Amino acid sequence: MTPSVTSVILTTVKILTLVGLGLYGIFAAIIVRQEQLMAAVLEESFESVLRTLVIVHFAASVGLLLLALFLL
Image 1 (cartoon, rainbow, N blue to C red):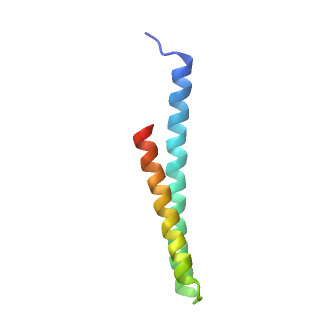
Image 2: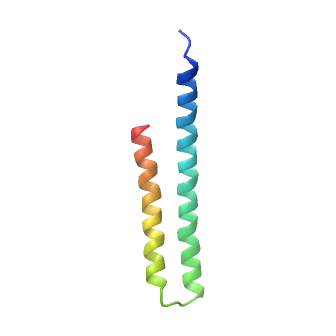
């Protein structure tokens, strides 16, 4: 039995969504590394706030990727 066009399109969209979220997770990890390097060079008063935002962003991106893996 051949798959219908709709199921092929939906499967392709799901795969592309997971790939895109995976790339976004890698991007978030790179942001964490860049923030570490910046903190080593610059000493700012808002460094702890920036570090917190970066960690929350990374955790949200990984959480979204895991949620998509389970739901899709």
